[in-house]
Image (cartoon, rainbow, N blue to C red; front, side, top):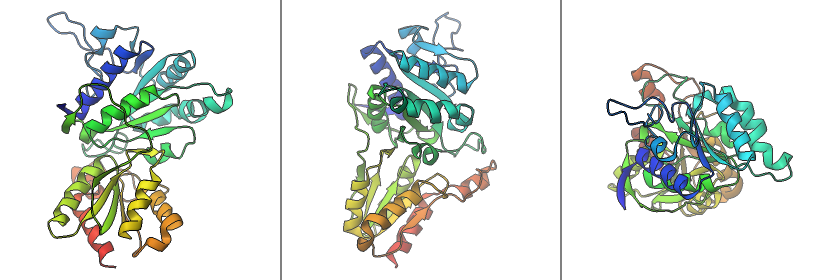
Length: 335
């Protein structure tokens, strides 16, 4: 075990899997370009956030492939490579840009298995998501709700470095298209990560905290914020189950329902849009399958239904935080 940041854990997973499987390639903007230096050493800049650094000198430019600034070209090439027998890991710098390549995701990758007699489509599409850097509405969205609504896609949203490595290894080995979402505000967060090979199955959430009064469900960066709120309340004698689903499609419904049947109260925290989003979906799940267990109405903590503001002060008001999560837990207990 070594303490690694999420950035280092993702990079380690790419190194490990490219060593293990020669069919794995990495494709995207600046994944192999830009670096160098006075020593003359050729290396990858690693993209905007340095995720693919070190891959180029180790695996060469036949497997670490720079593309034009064209998301449609990146995903189109990845789709073709997958059908030809490779395992492409395609990088889209920001998930906001999927509008440019949405047809390749929605109508091609997601449907290959069902349109071409069970054809394998082992594509991983890595994207940076989330607000918190005042990057405005075109570089700060987290579109897991939209992507999870598409049949044929698997959607992964890790909340820590340990999960990121294990889930990415699982994603690359999966024979279906996987959307791998990396929250930019978690890249520098570190925890203990195994040095070797391990995978985390999709659809298996984790109980981050255990308690008896309220079930809290959170994903991505919201898990980190929920931990702050839950730990504060624990000191006051209010204990919560904190569930991190890890993947939003497939969703570990049974873990959520099992916890809810014990606590009778549910708070869902999500950074995505409140309309037709993950929080609404989980709230509906609770009402549909555990209504008799509910002792209070389900409470959701989400941003407002508006584009993400650019101004730092407004962005802070827009995003859920630990104080709002704490308030939501208190409110559901008061009913």
